[in-house]
Image (cartoon, rainbow, N blue to C red):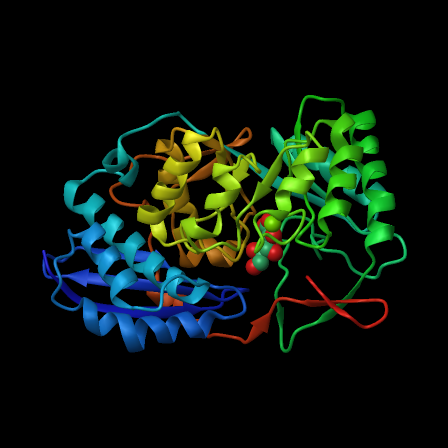
Length: 402
Ligand SMILES: O=C(O)[C@@H](O)[C@@H](O)[C@H](O)[C@H](O)CO
Ligand SMILES: [Mg+2]
C-alpha cells in the first residue's frame, strides 16, 4: 500500500487545530493531529514544505521505518515542532494500518489491558467558593478524579481558571495576553483550597493540581509537603523540568505524587526523571512526543521504574489526539490516568468520533483504526485565527513562566 498524497487541514472551530490527512493507493486514508498551541503554522509548514514531499510513494505499512526515517533523516532531532510533525504522520499511519486490518489500533498494539480509561476533569473557579461548586458539579457528572484550580485573592488571573465552566481555553485570539504572578500568595492559598474540598466532599475522589511550572524547586517541595495530608493523586509540573535533576530536591521532601511531561517531546527529555524515579506519572502525549510509536517507547521505559502514564489531554489536543491516546491507553500496561477536557460541540462536529464519557471513564467503541474522522466541509467553515497562550510577569515586571 503506497502513500498517494497528503495534505494539512487547519481549522478553527473555536480554537485552532492542525490535522494531517494521508491518502493511499488503496483508497484508505488516515489522519493525525499536528496541533501545537500558539505555534500551529510552524508545524503546518514543517509538514507541507519538508515532510509531505518525502512521504509520497512510500509504503504506508512501514510505520517504524517511516518514524526512523523522519527522525534520523531530518538530522535536527527532537523539539516540539519536529516531534509534533512526526507524531501526525505516525498517528495517520497507525490509523491506516488499523483500517486496512479492520481492527482498532489498540488491537495492533497488543490488545486491551483494561475495559475503560479513567479520566480526570477540570474543576475551577475564580475563588474557592466557585471552585468548590465546580468540584460538586464534576462529582455529580460521575468523575472519579478531578483537577482543582482556583483564582488567588489579590491576583487578577490564575492559570487554569476558565471563562465558562466546561470549556476552559487558555489561548486567546490576537496577541499574547500578560498575567501577573505572585508565588507567596499562591502558596498561602492553595493548601486551604484542598482542605475545603476534602472537608466538603470527603476522601472518595482523586484530586489533582497543576502548578504549571511556576514554582522554584524548594517552593514546590514546600507545597508538596503542605498538601500531603489531602492525599493528592498528583501535583503537576511543580517546577520547570528542563533540568530533570531539579525534581530530586522536591522528591526528597514530599510524598505527594509528582507528574511531569506535557511539554516534553522525546524520551530524552524525561529519561532521568524516570530512571531516577523522581516522578510518579509521565504526561507525554501522542501529539507532542512523536506519536504512538515514540510514546510506547517512553511508556515501556517508565514501566521498568513503576512510573505510570497520565497523558496530557487539554482542549488544544484535538479529538484525533484523544482517539489515539485512548487506543494507547487501552493497551498500555502501566496506565495511570488520562486528562479529559471536553471539546466544544463545534469541534466535535468537525471531528466525528465514537469515544464517550461514562461515569468517570472514557469508553472506546470498536472501530477500525483510531476511531475518529475529519469532516472537511465542516472544517473549511472555520478558517485559522491567530491565537496565543498568555505570558506571565512577576509584580516587578520580570518575565515568569506562564
Ligand atoms: O495540564 C494541562 O492541561 C495544561 O497544563 C494545559 O492547560 C496547557 O496549559 C495547555 O495545553 C497549553 O497549550
Ligand atoms: Mg498541565
